[in-house]
Structure formats: structure tokens, C-alpha cells
Length: 123
Image 1 (cartoon, rainbow, N blue to C red):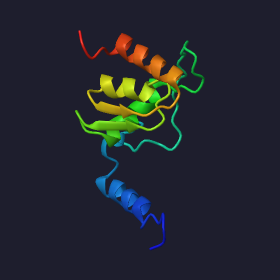
Image 2: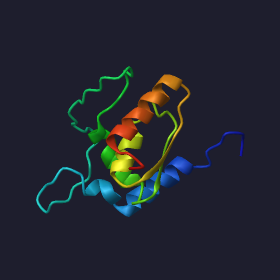
Image 3: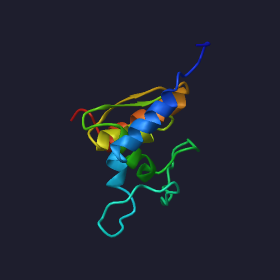
Image 4: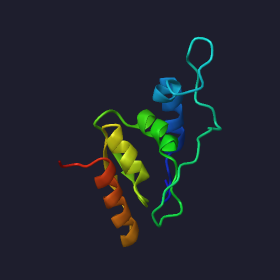
């Protein structure tokens, strides 16, 4: 193996997901006939406004099926580019733990306020 060689990891993951039959994404796919269908490669998700000073936020409905498919209840979600905290917010709403990494202090403050306002950890 050479340095930074992925050793077939992406293919191993793809084969495992295929063998699993789509996992949680099947439940959230387009319902056809028997009520089961795989999530398609193009998803239609309505936009969602965000008023704070972060310009690359995405709708919560976009990340929700990804978290459901990739993380069990009370599991751990890692967001290495946390930004305004949308992934963390959805993770908490779905009863998942999260670790968010963000270098920009302004975005950290936005995410902290947002999480405290929408899913407070302590009452």
C-alpha cells in the first residue's frame, strides 16, 4: 500500500450498504405500491430561511434522512464543518449525540445560540 491509499474502503462501504438493502433510507424513500422504495438520487427539499450571518445553511429536511440512515438512536453524529449547526440541531431533535468542529468563532456562537434556543440541553 502507498501512503493515503484507501484500501478499497469506499467500495467496501458501498457493498455493505447495498447488502443491507438501503437501511433507513428505504423508509424515507418515494412510496410506490407496497410502500417501499429506495431514496432516489435527486431529492426534492423545500428551502428553509435562516436569518443569522451564515450563508451556506441547508434545510433540516435535507440532513434528516442522512442521520436516520447513518446513525442509530442515541448514536453519535460527527460534523467536521459545523457552521451554523444545522446537522447538530437535527441530530438532537432525532435523539442523537453530536460532535461539531468549526474554526470560525462567529459560527460557533451562532450554533450555540441556535441549539440552546431550539433544543436546550439543560432546563
